[in-house]
Length: 248
Image 1 (cartoon, one colour):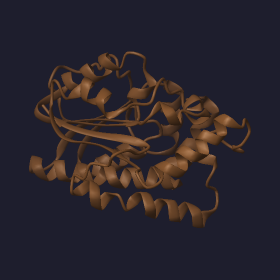
Image 2: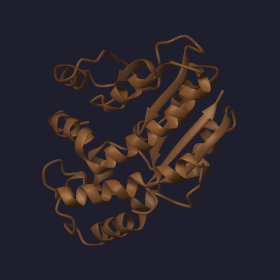
Image 3: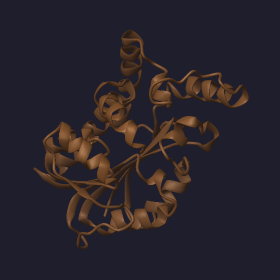
């Protein structure tokens, strides 16, 4: 993440419709794992960015937060009271089977060696513990948004199964952000076809596209509405992102 992006990202994580709805959906699934565990979880959150997911996860147990960039850690700690460890998903400095819940939300797409990243998440997960990840979906909607966020790739479900489902027991793996995926695909298609079709301003990412508070609220409600289906473990046929939960 570019250093001048930290402040904007901090605000986005706490106000933008995509982050708010995604984190609410994630929260509903973590709550189920919390109840299944019978109480507080020992959690590691790998790739915390500016800390919003760790703040949410702290409702369910003790959270160890890890971030790759020291400048991002320093900025985040200047904004909120949170302990963040410097580290990488490719080499987690913890013994085998340390955590009840291993989380990595929109992180694996940032590294070339995703097999090593997956093996590290699996390694530090306790027996009977859970691994919970999200990644962006479909290279067909690759855009400047992916480049500004330093993504290496976007995934399809078969690739995620290849990384995790051979070793772990699948609990729930599905595309999500389904209703908005078609308009997002159309906008990004025309952005590739007609350079400059999308006018990005502040962050130079797609997060700039919805600045109107009423539209932000509308998109939030549409995306958040998926939580009803996710709780019932409905499998969406496609979407902008992929969610995966496995048990070791």
